[in-house]
Length: 335
Image (cartoon, rainbow, N blue to C red; front, side, top):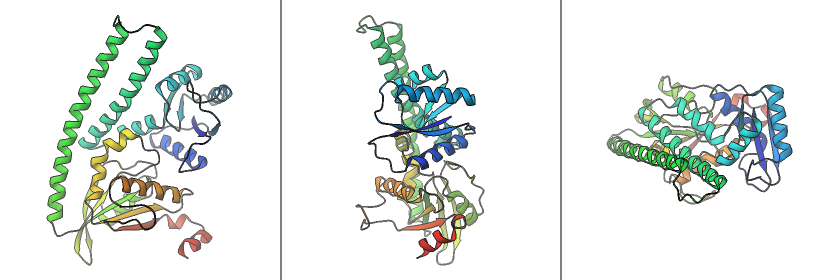
């Protein structure tokens, strides 16, 4: 079952209906059958469970009615909130970050992609491990002077996670250096590099396959493509160009993944032209464009803000799924 919290006073770039549809699509992308989904308005977020008492009971009743085995919450849950909800609902509960990490873990195909996903998983796991054990220490009522078995275990777990994360970061640093060398060689080559970017499921990989004749996974689902792919294409004016497909962007991308996938996204910064592929049939097309532009700005691809922002790398919009638009909307966009 999918639940979309709508917290009063919180600024969302995408409205609650679009967010509910998106989190449902994320669940489907990993093969989860959604029995029921709904929006839960929240006036005041509860530290213990996020939802109010009556809302938790409604979620529990709906789970029982549909025999749902898993509850997905479209938002960030603290370790305490997740555990309390699981105790109340008697079911596994995961938040948006956990779901996206699961998808990335299943889809990463290259050695680099697997390294990045594992680093993101460990970062997520580490923060929840600490919060969970801190809560247990408070429950125990002691000061930790005795160094009991729980405290010993948490310290051991933290050391193990930190050590593994250190090794992964060193391996990824080597990958970045190798990428930099490859990028340097491409810059010396006479062929321009074109990077495809866009919101997830906008149609980048389908366009990539049509232009290159490649067989990159291009399904009608979120995050069908995770690993960057490059192919040569023929262009009339320059004879040849290099086309790069990238991971799709998404709203509220977990901070762990923004950091872990930075090396992948850095390929965009070395492009001569960026093609921003947009799903014009999506009700959230404008908000999706804003999300992509904000991430490109974070990468340093664009400079400044607003309509007059300087763009060191030319950006061309590619309007996709035009055939799915009704005639009136097509006329509005074409005007």
